[in-house]
Amino acid sequence: MSVLEVTGLTHTFGDKALYKDAEFTLFQGEHMGIVGQNGAGKSTLIKIMTGEVVPDKGLLKWHPGVRVGELNQYAQTDGHYTIRQFLQSAFQDLFDAQEKVEALYEKAAVDGDEQAMIEASELQELLEAKDFYSVESEIAKLENGLGITALGVDTPLEELSGGQRAKVILAKLLLEKADVLLLDEPTNFLDREHIAWLTEYLKAFKGAFAVVSHDYDFLENICTSICDVEFQTIKKYHGTFSDFLKQKGQLREDYIRQYQAQQKKIEQTEEFIRRNKAGIKSKMARGRQKQLDRMERLEAPTFTTKPHIDFKWTPLTSPTSLRVQDLQVGYSDAILPKLNFSVATGQKLVITGFNGIGKSTLIKTLMGLIPVIGGRYQFAPGISIGYYEQDLRWERANRTPMQVISAAYPNMKEKDIIKALFRCGVSNEHCKQEIGTLSGGEQSKVKLCRMLLTPVNFLILDEPTNHLDAETKDSLRDALIGFEGGMIVVSHEESFYRDWADDIFNIERCR
Image (tube, rainbow, N blue to C red; front, side, top):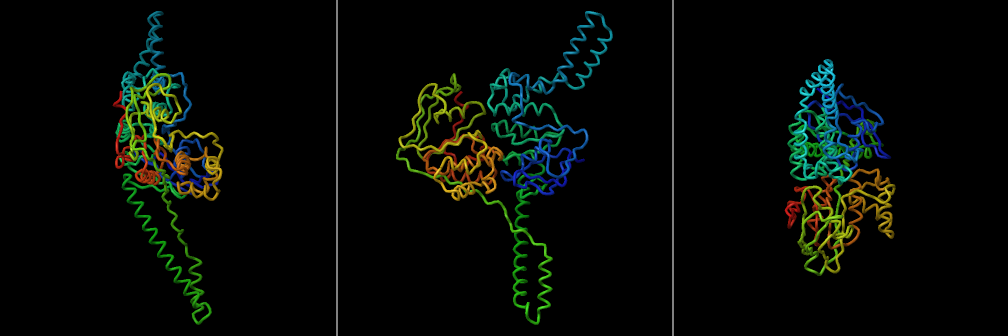
């Protein structure tokens, strides 16, 4: 049985057509991944499925009575709620019923009200039928599984970082037990062990879900089908993510062969027409021309060109790029013990650890964005740092990517800006679109482009793979492998760094 049928879906964002007469079906119990290049329309598709965005054309038909839950990391919440209160609100109707039961029992005891006793008993049966008395253990299971317990369940939401808050919102969504889950990048703010927990949870989930993710190991483990959003189409493949890659590769090869064969036939026919249009075979030539005019021509393959990321390097004479001695980081108080480490010139250091432990705080301290609590750090003389901040924040979100690059490099010619952005995977149309309207992946590419235009000898990258598609991740990986300077890369994605990291500093071991 289908829980969602999508037909004739057509939608344009700005000047870009995302889908044209697209269709797909989500079946009961199906675990579907949604993939595609940055800016292809994956997140917009989720918003259309939830009703947040109304498509230009098309029909979305949900099965009657289906309860749909959406992961909205930016949802408005009462900041005064503690984590525990927020999670309990997933069962608010049951907690309200429990309060009513207590009030009715009290009334029956004080007034001898028999009707109150009957009502209380009926509500008690309802609570037992809905397994209310196991709610607290269920909440605790989610808190432990997603690493929320470590945040302190009595912590107000307003004191959480964006990643911590997103984790709590995900937990509440899972507690609500919708029939269908719509998840947009659920692993972006999860650590490795919590991604593993979510993987097992979703594999066992009896309902249907659609998940947008650039974590392809995650998709491989949870999906039974893949929807590929590409070139205004949505094509569904059955099987795992690796099955999808094989099928898509074969289809592309078949298409290229068909296109090349058709082009050869067109060339041969046109040559025959040129040679015979005025001779004794002119009638035959006219017939061939009619055949050409009626031919349904295949579009030239326009498969996405892989971005080309290349950091400009400037030499550093010192053998050590960075020394950290008894460094304490935090805001009002130190959040980690004293840190001691160094990074040799040319060394590739990856920092890992659960979200909220202080990785970004350490990075911001090294960049001089927040003051040192205690101890010291020292970069080598002549250091030139390329810094990538994970937060997608812009001083002026109404600027276009071209204007962002131009503001940073005012002497750069327009054609060179366009070329630089294109090399990072930003299309010509997106170059001239307000950056605040672009997808997270496209914004990340603009940030990378701005970094690449200045020669550096040390890189500090904070979760650079968040939001990036597979091709851009591969190009970034190649660029980091080829970079001759030292680097610190904060990452939760082991598959990204395991092949090239010289050292891995698990900051959890400092506690």
